[in-house]
Amino acid sequence: MSTEDNKKLAAEFFARFSANDIAGALATMTEDATWWIAGKPEQLPAAGEYSKERIARLFHNMDGRLKDGLKLTVKSAIAEDDKVAVEVESYGELRNGRVYNQEYHLRMTIRDGKISAVREYLDTQHVFATWFQP
Image 1 (cartoon, rainbow, N blue to C red):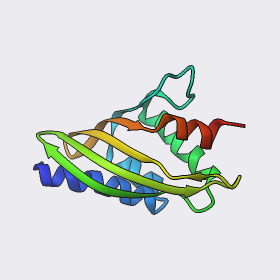
Image 2: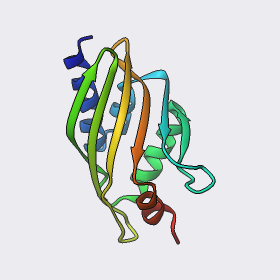
Image 3: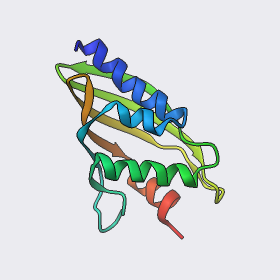
């Protein structure tokens, strides 16, 4: 795939997720895909490395706690070889009244036309305050 194709694949993932098509978003990933979320697991329960199956559970758990899903906007993307660096902003209202408005930087690795690895960098304090703080 070309670097433009890789950027389109990354954008497709976020478009599907934004449309509450979690299964479609997951279909853009290889079966052995990994997803790493920044942070210290002892301080942020969501931090660490996930298999595709485990990240799917996290996505569905998040979706169940949101009023109308999570809207993701790709702000920019840069690709080189099999890597895509993406800046993304999210917005979602939780059923408990909190608002999740996050800014991310993700590095995606593409293999055979699918996403095979993701490294996600984000504001871990905002994650904790929104999703985990009592």
